Image (cartoon, rainbow, N blue to C red; front, side, top):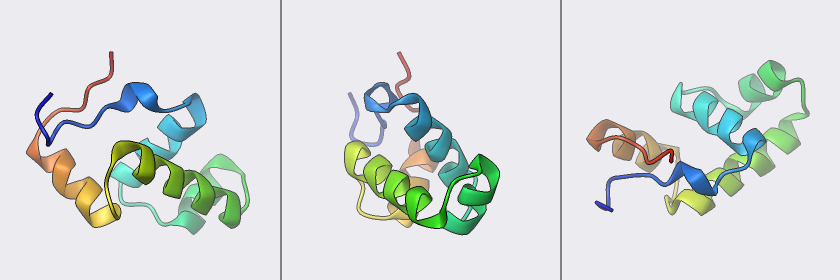
Length: 73
């Protein structure tokens, strides 16, 4: 798998929802409002998504998204 490819198969259903919102550039507060969860829970899920995908921050996530497709199967 190329280093730019993100392996989304490791994410839970909720983490995938958070990933989609992160990829859209939403903040933790906006993610919380969209998913009707607390901001702290959104932050927890966002951190887990970044960790599982092996990226350090949202900027790196967006950079890797621009580089190539994600592995979903």
